[in-house]
Image 1 (cartoon, rainbow, N blue to C red):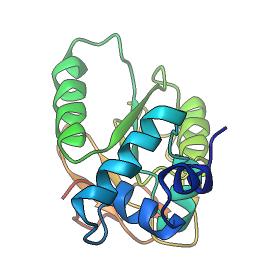
Image 2: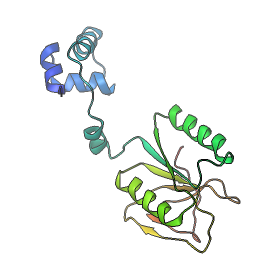
Image 3: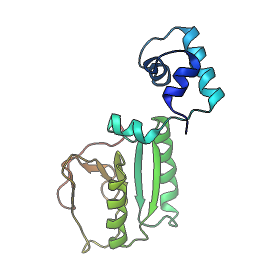
Length: 170
C-alpha cells in the first residue's frame, strides 16, 4: 500500500504539503498542488480512512438499523436518509434487525463498536423487549417511531423512556 511519504518523495515536497493538499487544510501554491495530485495519480495513492478517522475521532459513517427492510414503508425513509447523509459526505451502513429485539441490540452494538458517528434506528415493534446500552462517551442515536420521528439521546445511553431532542445529521 502506497504511503503519503512516497507521494511526498515522488512530488519533491514535504509530507506536510501533501497532507495540506489532500485535506485542503491550508493554502498550497497551484504548482505544488499540481505536482502532488499528479504524484497521487501516478503511484496510485489511496488515503487510509481508518487512520484518518482515528486522528479526527470521526468515521464519516452513520448506522441505519431498520426493523424490516422488506417493509415498503421504509424505502422512502431509507432513500431520504441516504440522500441527506450523502450531501454531508457521510456513508450509511444499512442493517436489517428483522423486527427481532435481540438482533436489534446486537446490530446496534456492532455499529457502535465500528465507531459509526451515530445510529438511526427504527426499533422493533415489541415494547416489552426494551433494552439499554451504556457506552460512556456521548453517542447520538435517532429513533424512528410511530409517534416520534427524530428523537435522540446524547447521554451515551440508549434507553426507551428517557429521550432528549437532538440531531445526528445537522
